[in-house]
Length: 382
Ligand SMILES: [Zn+2]
Image (tube, rainbow, N blue to C red; front, side):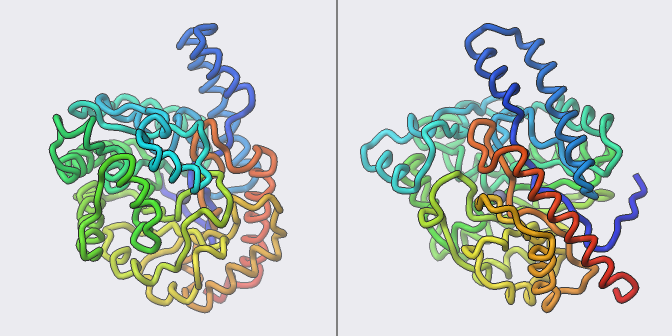
């Protein structure tokens, strides 16, 4: 697709809240009240509704809202990986107490590798093929990053018979993801984004503690070695891919817990590693004060998808407020390298949205109107 984007393109990180009738249908499916075929029809309709909402909001690059996935971990992508309730994986009172201290929801499902993995390429083809058919805007398709899946889905007890070490699993995931990325590029997807909140763990090790308690995973020390491994894995997943825009999304996690329980800290520590990723764009949260100073953008060597809308706060930002945040970033970045995004998805899991659906739309709309303000001011100057 030959795409000409305006200055300050607007997009979303990925997920959008599921319509209430879709979550009801999911309950009906699990209870055996509707058939998988009938559920598929609900999913198709939810994708169409989301695509049309995103187009109506005026976004330049859209997603399908990840309507078909149980969560952004996208364990459905692999045979041999399954979802289990996180609290079930947390076997000790210490582990469960730790999840509670982070404000983690009881309904959160976690991916676990429980066998040798096989990529369900047909699932990617169906998801992307459907969204491409129903959208008139360039499509962003999100995939989990291999580093994130390594630390989240390698479980000492359940995985080590198949993948003795986390790296064995991580490199297998990266190799399989590479096939998915190549296929998506061939299909005409405009932007492929790998989601990697785990790349922020060296900033605040709260989540490393979680995967240590739940999975028995321990990061390499010194932590620079862990960061190098993360870079190697992501680069393996995008190796040899061209003709598509590639991005990596980094945030500090997006579960609907209290602000004070969530990780915090600026990108300074990890930016030299983010610059080594073989991708075009870094999609970074910045609207939340937990993400630290914008000054670090002076170190960024790539395009930046700037988080200008806080997905966790209920207040809907005004377009002027959003434009103001973008202007702050323009002190450190050329206008041609700046995209506008919300900080993260609005519903990283089907059953744990961080905002209601209508409010998510209003937040996205404020961002689109902010882009109009910025274009009036900067077009012709860039
Ligand atoms: Zn995120």
